[in-house]
Image (cartoon, rainbow, N blue to C red; front, side, top):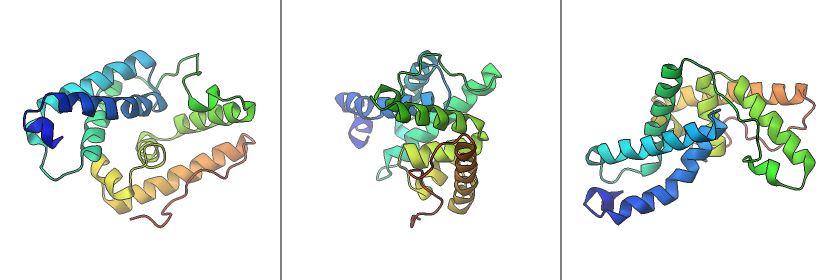
Amino acid sequence: MAAYVAGNRPAFLSLFERWAPRLRQLFVRGGLRGEDADDLVQQTFFQLHRARNDFRAGSTVRPWIYTIALNLRRQFMRRAGRKPEHELDETSAPAAQTADPDAAIDSHHVRAALRSLPDAQREVIMLHWFQGLSFREVAEVVGATPTAVKVRAHRGYAKLRAYLEAAGVTVGGAPSYGQGEE
C-alpha cells in the first residue's frame, strides 16, 4: 500500500490480486449474489484508490480495506432494502466442491446458520473466523471496542452452535470466543 500511495501504479495490481478474492469471499459468504459481490469488490478498490492518500503510513492494510468493504456492503444492503440473497447454485462454496457429501451438507448448514445471525454478529464472525482477523483488528474494522467485539463473537458463536446442533450437525471445528486472543 505504501508503494501505491507513493505513486507505484503496479502496486495497485498487487493489492487487487491479493485482496479481491478475499473480499469476494466475504461478500458471498455474507449473502450476496456473485454479480453483486463482484460489483462491491470493484467499488471497494475504487474507494481504496480515492482514499489512498488518507492511508496512514505504517498502518496495516487489512483492517482498512475490510472497513471500506463492509461499509460498502452495508450501504448496498440499505439502498437495496433487502436481506442477503443466495444463489441457487451453491457450488462456489469450498465444501460443496469436495467429494465428501457430509462436508457439502455441513457447509449448507453453516451458511444457513450464518444467515440466521444478526448483522453485527455475522460481520464479527465473518471477519474473525473466515478472514482470520484478530479481535483487535475486527474491532478496528467495525468501529467497536475489542470487548464489544468479543461479546458479539461469543453470542454469535453460541447461536451458530445451537443452530447447527438443532440441525443435527456435529459441532467441533468452529472457533469459540476468546481462544487466547487479544
